[in-house]
Structures are given as structure tokens and as C-alpha cells.
Length: 211
Image (cartoon, rainbow, N blue to C red; front, side):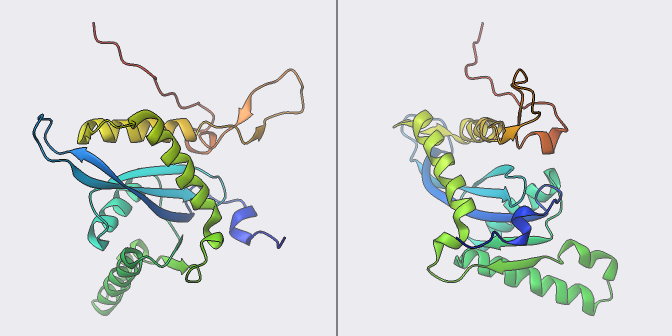
């Protein structure tokens, strides 16, 4: 087995080195009516390459525009990505081309103080080599497992689907990575959520009871 890449083992801020992938499609209803036609939707997974923190975004289609919207929401809520890693999907290639075009436009108009927002180094894995993206492929497998366990044959509305994604995000970000101490009586684990909240665990209420 070869050595892990440097961005997998060196300390970094959450999502400074970010892997991206999509899973789906899933069905949802834009309007919660019995006869409304279900629509397809996808889930964008953003995973930190060093801390294993995951961020999920609801995406209505696989276009580059919708993906950039999801990327902007993730950056606004989490942090700025310096390096992005992904496969050779057409939406990723199109998004990279749009960001490069925006960078050239800002530089040509001498808006250098704004170029740091688009100065992202995009790394594409070799074509037809999913094992190069094993980290986000494993994350996709985990997300799909939780979605299938909860959804089954049910079709949710947009609000319900978004709520479910956030609860699954909290669940996978609280999985144990390693122990915090060498004390055998200390059962507190280190989780990806520690890198986001500084130690406060994330919680996801399994059931909502309306009184």
C-alpha cells in the first residue's frame, strides 16, 4: 500500500482541502399534495480531507450552476476552500471553467482584492479511477445507507428532505474517530464535530413529538 497524500495527514482547517461528490437521484415533492408529481434531486457531499468532517447540500439537478450555488452555500456556512478534489464529472469541469473565467475577468479589471474568493486549485482524479476518491466514495456509501434506512419508499417534501439531510449530517459528524485520552475510564471519543464546534457534540433528535 502506498503512502497517503500529504493533504490527508497534515493538520489543516476544516474544509481547507475538500473532496466533493454527488449521490442520487432521490425523489421529493415540490408541493405536498397527493397528486403532485415527484421530482428528482441529488445530494452534494463535501468532505474535509484531513478532519473527515462532512457537509451535505440539497441540489435539484446536476448542472454546473446549481453546483456552484451549493458550493457558495457551503463556503458561506463553513469556510473557504483552498483545494478542491473531485472526479471528472461534467458539472465539476464546468464549475471549474466558470471559476477560472471569473478569476481572469477580475484580474483583467484590476479587482485583485476580490480574486482570493475564486483562487481555488481544483484537482481532478484520473478518469475511470474511483479508487483515487475512496474517501468521498466511502462518505457517499454512508449517506446513502442512512437515507435509504429513513426514507424507504416514502417521498418527502423539500423542507422534510432538507431537514433529514441536516440530521444525517449531524449523525455522521458525531461518529468516533479515536479516543481523547489514554485513560481506560474515559470513554469520550474524538469526533469530526469537535473540529467544527470546538468540543461541543452535535445532537440530532430522532423523533419529533407534536403536542
